[in-house]
Image (cartoon, rainbow, N blue to C red; front, side, top):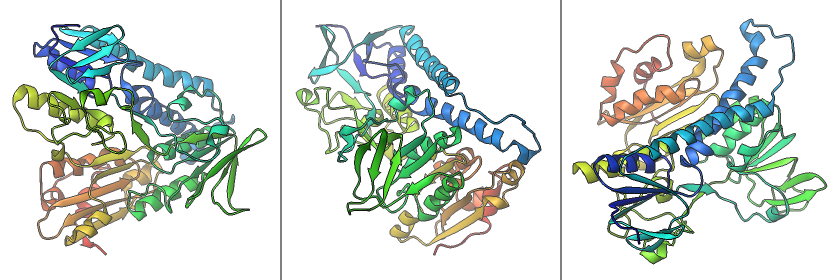
Length: 459
């Protein structure tokens, strides 16, 4: 039994390292455990490597459009997938190594490489020893969901993790899943030169978004030659020679897609099934997420769950905020809560989508007296100047309280401009106050006050 520990952190994803460092800096004796790669999903198979691929794909896309800007490139545009992968590996690898180096240089922090499993509510077994502490923090993240599709076991397939090893150009990439991960990879590989088909079970892609947002993203993808099949409620897979066939309907002779490679992008599951949670009495929900209260405490006193494994955010930024909540509450006596944060996220297709607050559907369901302002990107000077006019901006407000309810910016710079609205909402500013702000020209954000001056009743 290892003695003398005040806290144990399991996992080095977005929340864990910062929390371990903060606790160690406060004079606590801390151990942090990592079983595979430092930095978790974001650093190794999520945000950093995928956005590096997005950047390479954008470079190829702009190169093909060079003549639109008066730039003439004589040679055909070629994409060297070996070099694309090498660049991605360097960016992600450097970030992972930086996390490891940082952790190993922190005083009062012991870094252990191995698989932790609970023995009791205060002890975990890792390698050949048992570690015990009064406070334990679970930060084990999640992984790609592999759905029970008939025939899937008979073919090779990729996930968001294994596609990171691809250093060649798939002839025809079939993507099952028309949500955020699937759409980003679909556009990436289409711009690299693959034929791409995206298959979605439900009637429209990114179903949590409003229909106009889903339609806007669909048009962007189809304009680049991506085939999108929706309403595939009865999928089955088979191998036909060297090809992979995905049948989209149960009926004989129904729709099917034939491709060379298959990517699964249908959701994620938490890495909680091999932690021995039952031995510690830690409750989980039906999907395996660890049940937590609004201050991220589990059902067992002295144990917290932070990051994707608690099902309360599933984004890098919410995971980091989990660290901030727990650290502030423990070390500063605060009472911060996950309910304090606004729902905000991005879809990093090109152009991107920035989203904050309530959707139109949620607003209508709430019964609020809402006003909405909308503007196509064709009427945004920055978009016109850059030759990137797909998408639109919209913002919804409460006509009675003047509260900003939500916004979506699908278009160039949308992932950055949305923060103008996010910040105003976080500060509980009335929309009439944001309307009077003078923004810099020429930017996308400068049109936000204009939107607020053109509000109409929500239909």
